[in-house]
Length: 191
Image 1 (cartoon, helix red, strand yellow):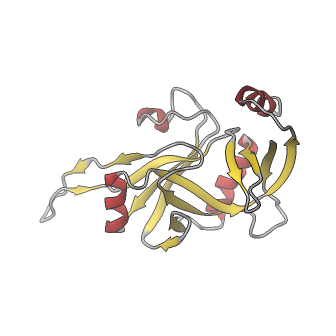
Image 2 (cartoon, rainbow, N blue to C red; image 1 turned 180 degrees about the horizontal axis):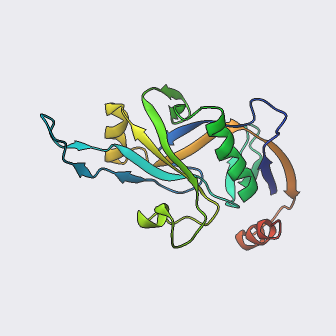
């Protein structure tokens, strides 16, 4: 099975992540954490939820299974370097409010309020909230203002983030029979 590393073409204006989708089955196999701490607000207001979802947008060196329209199967992955650059470009281009539902329905009223690369196994906000992700993971927190989307998240109908974007690829390995361990070893040897 072919393995492709996805990279960003710095000369392509549309390259990188263009939106973050809220999905029921994230390809990176990482669900988010729903932050809904109650907060006391003074004056005439009553308790309100924060309505923030936190999770992994991209995990470094994670093999992601794909199948194209011809039925050909392959894996893709992102290196730590590409993930860092994708996170930077996403914010540099001002795309924090670009989100979709299941890669199909454009959403309004949601925005990334935090974006960071996990750099430490112990002293990272993701650890504080129980997000089990390796160093190099792009973590995001998204504020959800759409009542319908917030309800879907609370019900568990949508469970994680999935990126949308344009990347360049290169074949890393071509084999008919690749075990999970072979795939892991191949990716780890790239760093």
